[in-house]
Length: 148
Figure 1 (tube, rainbow, N blue to C red):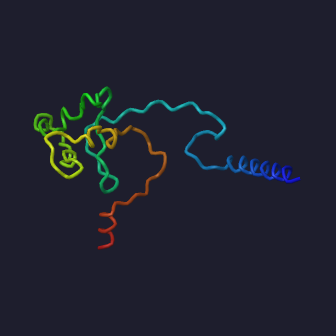
Figure 2: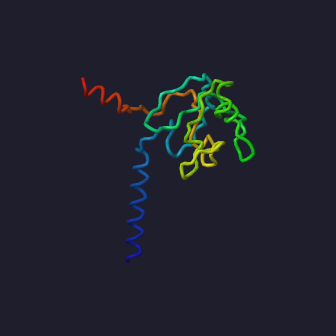
Figure 3: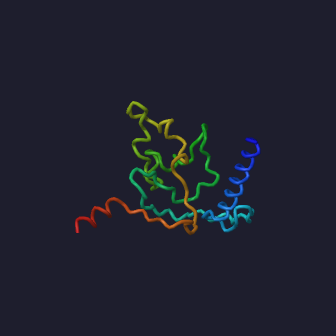
């Protein structure tokens, strides 16, 4: 008797979950049980324009393509322009001095192993419309508005 009741309850829950799943809000352009055609791969922004950061301590985004950049234990292509030795020649911004510090805060001659793999934190941007509206307000803008 208990097993029949358990099966009935589980079946009811499954049907309810299935009905609810039809009303789930998603960013998909198709129902959840349909596999839509994947979108075309978007173009990577490549304008070298520095972007405003969206929040404090956000790593800067990469304003250019990094296709075929070698970033592994043998080489780091990013540092051919962004190391402190190459910025005058390349006119690229130097990586932060924090990237030249070890765990104890000691400064190193070369980039720290902790910060060596750039695309762990820094990402390229693609030319697409946002999936969701962004209502983020920078703290500086909020403070300025409060002072007025």
